[in-house]
Length: 270
Ligand code: 15L
Image (cartoon, rainbow, N blue to C red; front, side, top):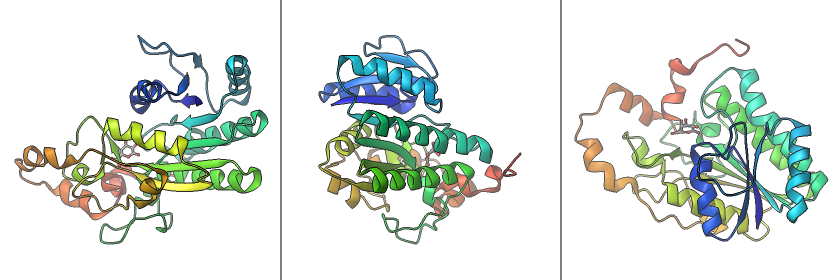
């Protein structure tokens, strides 16, 4: 499948590009930054929130065959102001969805986040029925971007899969991440499943590995064909060798961990 990947130079993009190529996809990268050394796929230095830049890239990329799907990873991966969150997560998504409709691209896989439900207390179930409960403007941006996907699925009958990613890291580093870790290899498996699942319509899935301590429901991912292979438990002994801190306790209380704390409070328009 020919896939446009936004945010291709970011931490997930750098892992995903070779991973998708290994699985037989033809990848086109897009990022504000130039391609990392060693990148061999076509690459567009462009802002995916800029309709003209996206249009120019898609017209060019389509010359060698139609782009069939978008994997939208671009977005500031941390808390900022409300304006920044809306621009980074919502306007980019809207720009790409408009372009998809124009070009007949029928599937988008979106890097959403657990922070869309981050204020959910940890003693409550976390599955696809969990209502939106963002912990930050970052989470608000992810909720709104998911709502945009839903709108375009209903209006234009595209397929859109929102992956509420946990902690994408080489390995977990904290107690919380023993539950929320998404390994590099499982991230590739998850996105590949979201790209190839037959007729998902609008789907949400949690993006974590098969962690022994996970409490977010993996069934929606499995329904797409995602079979996680990694488990953070192999790192538990090393992490637990260090006594728990107050931060560990705070992080354990909600899905979003540290993002619920006052350190992440900002004025909405600051
Ligand atoms: C995310 O969505 C963030 O981009 C990242 O900074 C981490 O906070 C991660 O979630 C997480 O919850 O560990």
